Amino acid sequence: MEGTHFTRGTDGGPVPTQLATWGGDGPRMLPLYYVSAAPQALYYPDQPEAVKLQHAWTQVEVALTQHREDAIKDVITGRKKLSDWTAVVQDHLRKGGRQAAEALARECEAAQKA
Image (cartoon, rainbow, N blue to C red; front, top):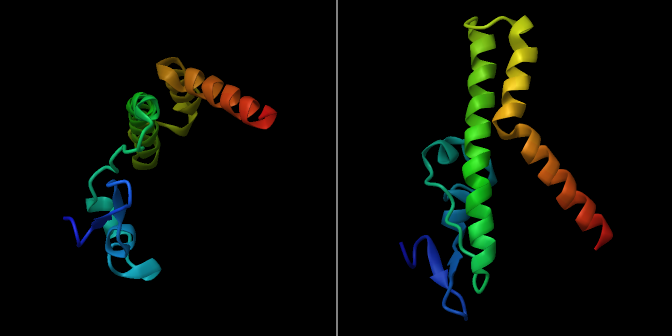
């Protein structure tokens, strides 16, 4: 809500208030804010290509994270054995983990050259 959760910057773009940034309770707050918070808006003024790239990556990252977290919970709750973990990792890599790792390695290498 404008005025409560954000104000407008000089370019007209939203600037989060302390309430939006910290959930109103400062750094000592309970992590419940993150459980109930909406996804962060993809907003980069004058950088539409950055928004498209971030959105594309988010789609991949969400699927990979869900797969990984489900596998961890399966082992913890006994639905899968710890000995199944190698197969879980291989499946994760096949479903996009390898491509994500390679993309991250390329970005890190490019950043070090810059």
